[in-house]
Image (tube, rainbow, N blue to C red; front, side, top):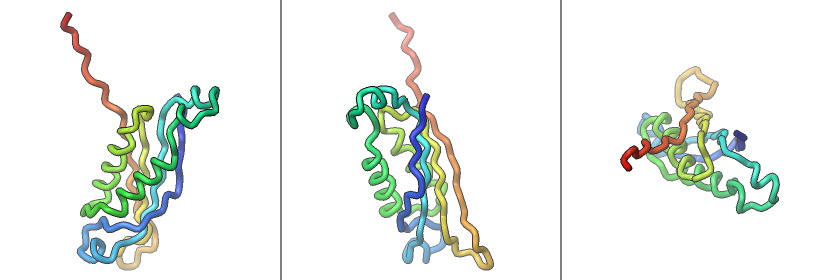
Amino acid sequence: MDWIRLTQIRCYGFTGFLPEEQVLGQWFEVDLAMQMSVRSAGLSDRIEDTLDYRDVISRVQTLVKTSRFSLVERLAEAIATSILEEAQVQEVRVQLHKLHAPIPDFNGKITIDITRRRVLPAPNWQL
């Protein structure tokens, strides 16, 4: 299986536990790794045979900009669920970076790193 990676999708959003985070907002950055076959697109050279990166980036940006979750873990889960709605994507890894967390004397970033796989329906053994 192949991977498509989109990195440094930067957006301003309003997810955070503190009230001021949901009012003032802050910068987030998202890195995605999506497992899917790119063989058809590699052979055909047609965008219809692959995932349109513009749609994925737009979907992530919209989620970050419009969501009002308390926890970044919830936002990461929402992004993963949204990406798995794409029929071609079998697995997605979401790295959600909170770039400037309002924590005294902390200059780093907080990263939530989750991997989710498409759940296949149980087989129907009835004849």
